[in-house]
Amino acid sequence: PRVIGIYYPSEIVNCLRKAYLDYTIGRKEHIANTMLMLSGTFLHKFFEDIFSNVKEIKIDKEYKIYTFPETEVTYSDKDFQIVGRADEYIIIKSYTDDKSEDYLLELKTVSDITLIDKPKESHKMQLNFYLHFFPSAKGILVYIERDTFAIKAFEVKYSEELFRKLIERAEKLHKSLKENRMPEMEKNIAYCFRCKYFDICFGEKKSLNILK
Image (tube, rainbow, N blue to C red):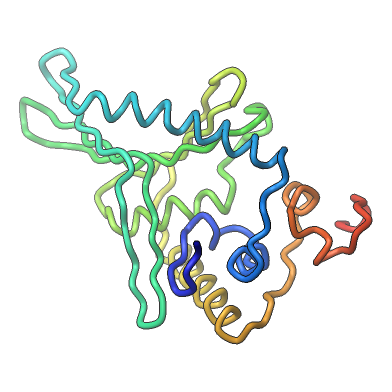
C-alpha cells in the first residue's frame, strides 16, 4: 500500500494527478498497461540478472568491472521522503594506475526503438535524481526495444536545476495529498489515452480530439 510522505522518482517525473489518484483511489491498471509493465519488468530483471551474476569482470588484464544492481537512494525532506533505486551502478577500474570510471545506468523499455532519437525529459529527470547521490558517475539512459532487444543509449549529465525541479514536483504532490486537492491536469496524448483515470479528467467517452 502507498504511504503519503513516501514517494518514488518514477511517479514524480510523470503526471502528478495520476500519482495523486494512485494514492487516494488506487485503481487497478488496464490489462494492456499491465502487460506492458510486465514485459518491461521482465526485461529489467533479465539485464539485472546478467549484471548481478557477474560481480567482477576482467578485461585483457587491464580493467575490471564491478556491478551493483538495484542501488537504493533516499532523499529526506522535513515533510516527506523520495525513495528510488538506480538500475545499475558500474565501476570500471584500471589495474595499471588504479583509476576508475563510474557509470549509473537507467533502463527503459520501448515498443519501437526507431522513435527514440533523444532521451525523454521525464527519464532524464529520474536518472538525474540518482546522479545527485553519485557525483562522480556518468549517467547513461538505455532504451531497449521489447520485441527485438535493440538498444539505444544516451549520456545524461547531472543538472542541479533538474534535481530541484523534481524536488519541487514532490513538494507539490505532497501538498496536494495533505490538502486533499487534486493537482492540475498534465496532458500527454501518449499517456492520457491509456490512463486508468481518463474518465476523471475527460469524461467517459474516449477521443483523441479531447487531448488536443
